[in-house]
Image 1: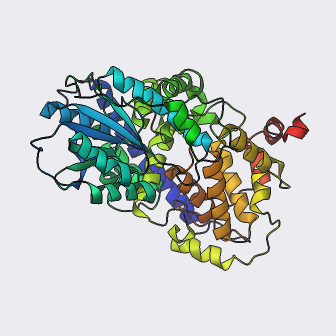
Image 2 (image 1 turned 90 degrees about the horizontal axis):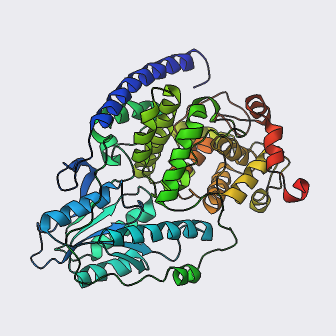
Length: 502
């Protein structure tokens, strides 16, 4: 739909919905403030967070433990999957074990990603030991190493967390097929505040259509976490010691993408970043979050991605400052809850979440009609990766991502849209954008990343705009528009190529 009166009406409707959503948000935050954190023995677990993967008996007579297969949510506290597993173990008076399956490769992840993850898991292992809960690092694909481990340890019930992406979903299915039939297997959405399958039974069209559904359920789901406690039922045998350094050295992954220094892995470090955001940057989030030169972002996406910090914990802490910074708190909830959970919704219900076939019909049509349009510039993947384009702002954004593992959120949009403009086809543009994002961003291979690329290139969760060459009706961004929003020269100087900076 072209810009005009129709768009104005839609914006007015969205403003009304946002006002209603704000009212529901206030109610949810009041409820969360009133909620105490009861003992894990006493709290009432919301069963809507849980779904059955495969059914077994209520309890195996010879069960020796309950097992939590940790995957997406790599933390101990503030983890609904971990809490559910401990609740089962306490109810049956059984030991609780935790395992993580370390796969040799995952969608092109590099040592930047594996290093961040492994160092976070070391913290998890240490905390588990302190809580009398053995932590096991299983080397290999879950389908090969987890079912034998279940049999060996006499597991009476298996709990895992949730990810909407096809590879982790296939891991769950593969384990289900190989698991002994008498072992019940459940999955808990410990990543979203409102569980993905509860928010909506279908793919939502936009933030406008999902916002009300999320906000209306926040009073039920945005609650304090009880603690994971020291487990009172000790295991018959401890976990084998983990040779972390040897494990790190043995990884068969690309080591040319170096780990970053600014982001310390692990829950403790992530919570420290959260507190620094609240103390120093939250007040500026609403007004300056789209200025790449301002320190206004939370910078929490790496810890959110690896599940080292719970988004729900971040919201519970940030909302305590709503009276002082209402606009910033509401804006943070919109991005960290509504947009983030919209991305999970898209990837869960659309199997083509990383291809042009996943776009809306209008977007596929307009991109196809303009596929043969003359491009002002054409770049190969290597040129893009090396930030060797004619555009100094785009190059600076690419270099920020390569060096720091995190490109500013506003520039991610500009960056991806220029890839559409400078490549041979929308398919190639999406392929290049996803490759570069997943290779360098610490939060690569994430629903937010796939949806961000499809929003920029394929109009997902957006509408049709004024038609133009190459883009068709896909929303357009250009260098001049960026210059009107922030000091482009300052950003370009900060992330200039090394030889220019010297």
